[in-house]
Image (cartoon, rainbow, N blue to C red; front, side, top):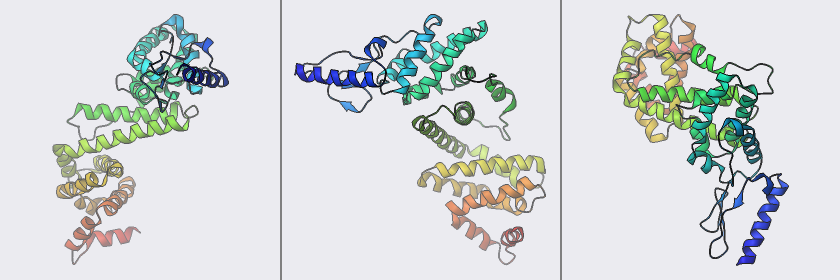
Length: 340
């Protein structure tokens, strides 16, 4: 009924008032009313009809309105009035448009506008909207988003995150990957972790922190699955690992790569994880320990037990069969004992 609608509207406006986001800020409003007077609170978990609570007048992503947009998104991120903002930001392509504005502001050295952009992008992360966060972290966006996050007005000096990621933190392909998409995913995953651990750790709330961890987790699963499917890559990896012609510097890089790969397999579901280790064993996984467990290089000698521990944890039968196959010398077994 009309009275029910009016009551719901009054309650919602009171909530907004208590959280400091009233009608005068044009943050949200009930856009329509269905025949029964019910409303739909989009994204909030309350579904009572077909309509949504959406931003009434979200400022456009232009230089002249950056401050207003920063105020709106900051207020929305701090309260429950973020309902509907994620849809508007994604559908209206705010992220790529704001990144174009960021490039222009940086060229002009417009510091006040860059500070406003910092507030805008941090608020977008804190809206707790999965689609907005995923858009921010797209491979074609993420490095420029990190650039916008360099201009924190509370810091005495602006950090050079992009310079570090592009120059210092170089991605080294010990053995080239055959899939360009895999390389893109690896770069993206590292940069997401960098945002979480270096760029925004003091500003992230628990919900956003969890969302970033979830995206990293899913990316790691994708990376492991793609490497597992790349048989030529794995074949070359183990050929070089077991070859006596491989020198220690190259062997160290190969072992570190395998250590990282086996560590990431922990993220897989049981069926996928179970399928990986027999493949690795077929290619020579157990044979690498004959050399690496007793290697002169400390890094190799330290990494080898970690790899073996992953195998023991997930496929202990592989280790047992290999140890038994070495009877009566039990070379690997006694090499492990000597290292204890």
